[in-house]
Image (cartoon, rainbow, N blue to C red; front, side, top):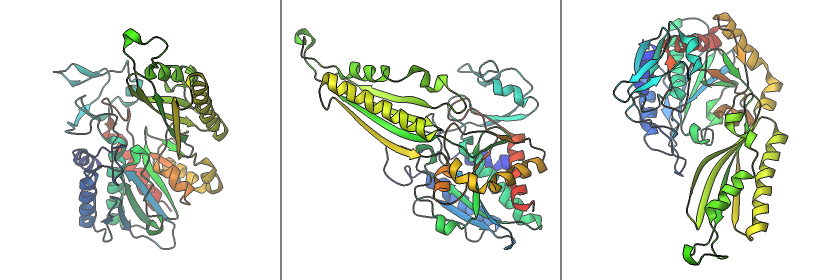
Length: 401
């Protein structure tokens, strides 16, 4: 049997970044390379119905006692576009405090003074990068943990629930649940394994939307531009100035929502800005969309109709209202954590998961920890010991009846 660490180190060698500019599914064909490898591995383990569909979704079943619930475990195969996912140089370091040198040649260090979470991991073995790529623990750790728990169930010989496995593409660009085959999946309820530090259990997430702001200007030679030039870049800056400064990500925490400017590209005649909007409270979420609409309308009155175009699209909603009628799925996770010696930490997700969308589609799906820290960046890491705890939790969820 393979360890969760062996699996994880193999999976991160696959470059599976998704691409929000692609309309294909999966958005990058390289995600299917990992999917195919997972199907092959599942079949070798004895999961007879393992398959990958034409959209890159991977499914499999570990049969169990038909008198018990059928429980799903879901993770995503893609990694964030925020940092490179190619040629990941992962290694394991024994951590006893202080700073970790990730790359001596480039002078890159993982520092306790910058990442206080390191203080929680003294005495553990950390899987880190060389400081030039992300690691891919989000969410290949979840994939490795589910695969290892599945193998445990196949060999334990004890009574356990039927496990339905689902691995999705394109979660990082908000499309992971788009083509998930719920009818085929067949679980009574499920958990995404896509969280952070040990003990985290989440059934509340942001309401989320994306926004594209396009500003149209007019370029005139600067020597004769008086009363003629319309600089779209300056109007774009003015749009940003109309949004509340204290509702940026760097000033918010907990249940506080935000406007986040992801990118801005432009020149005098044309500027485009990409935003995401987030809030746990639906009313406040709608207010944020109204603020952006009002900003665009104000600038169009000031500079002329059509100067600013605003396009907004809802991405997902807070799954809390879908989970509250069936809190037994949360209670079961809490009981499983306590059974294996983990202190549960029920907290809101300052983000989203495939589970949010799936919960709205009728599959209750809270989120469980993987053990990873510093997702989406070059300083991502995960302790070996915490992945092993996650495997114990998942095994307990299925067998602890």
